Image (cartoon, rainbow, N blue to C red; front, side, top):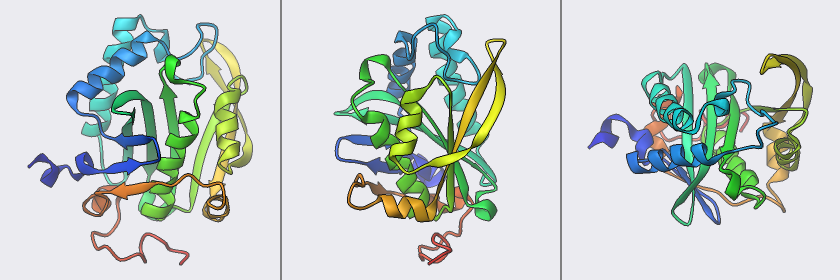
Length: 229
C-alpha cells in the first residue's frame, strides 16, 4: 500500500466538526476550485506571495502545483504539511504546519486559508487548534509561530484567542508596497494553559508511523515527543 511508503496519507486530525488530512486527488481538485472562487476581497492581500492575484484558472493550478511541490520536497529536516480541512465531508480550506530542523529546534510555523463562503463561522480557530495539538501533544514542539499583516485582524484574533503572544514586527513588500507583519509566538507552557477550560478537543490518528518523517525517533515512547516531561 502507498501508506507503507508515505504514512502521512493515513494521518488524521479530528475536532468536533472538522477533519484535517492530506487530500486525495479529487479533494485536491475541490481545494483548487475553492481557491478559484475567492479567498479575500480584491483590495486586500493577506499573503506575502500574492498568488491569489492570479486569474482563477491559474490560481487553481497553483494550488495543485504547490501541493505536489511540498510533497516532493519533503525531508525530515525541512517539511511542510498541507492538510485539507473538511467539514461534513466538504473541503473548506487548507491548514499548513511547517518546520525546519524540527528535531533540534522543536518549533513549527502555521499558515492557512479558507474559501470565502466558509469564513466567519469559527472554522479558522478550530483548524488552527487541530495543528497546534499535533505540534505540541503529538510531536513535542516547544514553540509555534504565526503572523499576520496589520490589516488582517481576523487571523490576528484567531492567534490571540489560542494564546499566542506578540513577537515583534517586520517590514515586507507586498504588491510592490511596504507592509507591516505582526509576528506571534505560542510557547508550550502557554498552550497547555489554554487547554482548559476553553480548549477544543482534538484527536490524532496514524501518527506513529509518521514520526521519522518529522525527524523524530520511530519508537512510540513519549520521552522524545515531550522533552520537558
